[in-house]
Image 1 (cartoon, rainbow, N blue to C red):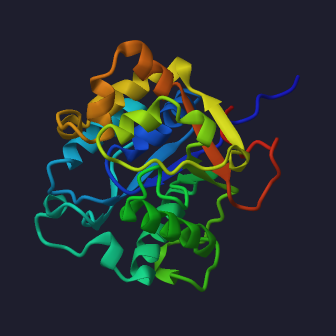
Image 2 (cartoon, rainbow, N blue to C red; image 1 turned 90 degrees about the vertical axis):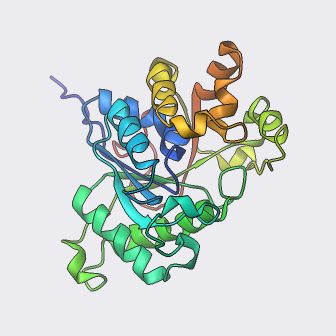
Length: 259
């Protein structure tokens, strides 16, 4: 009798609270429901900020454990770090990479998911910086001579960037443009994996709603989505697209996002 293939463990690394729910909430819920270990690292907003409890609630909904915070400030929001810590974009790169390496070695995920190089449609500087840090940390985590105090080496099998294709932003693009935001989509050929997360869309939406302070505002995406007709919102959140960036086992192996 053939044994079922184990669902790979998953670590998501995103810049801000709510990025995890908006960009990979369906995949996180899907993997957790299948019995896989899942976790989320958030690069900005600190534990004493008002969004930390919202993040904790969202991760609980998604089955992704407790928040893991790198502890930096948002590039555009001083309230993200009441104690006045350095912004992510100003932090020494080596320091930020080392902090993320420690989480990778502790979680020991099969797959890491993060931002794309464009910075997720709006080109937020924190998104782009988090993308850079994630690329470096995934490689460094496997090398014992780098960050030796950050735990035993661990090599994830795959790295995926959450992204949006040019043909996949027909509803989302105008929504963002309506509040003056940019829409930087990637060519369709850049997308290697699109996951239909319709069965987990309700969980994903509940996680997005947990970010109450963003839902209450007019310009952030959670607030924009909350004001849409239900059918339009469901169409936007029902699928998630990714680009496989790392080497490692070829597509079709067990270390892949469920599609």
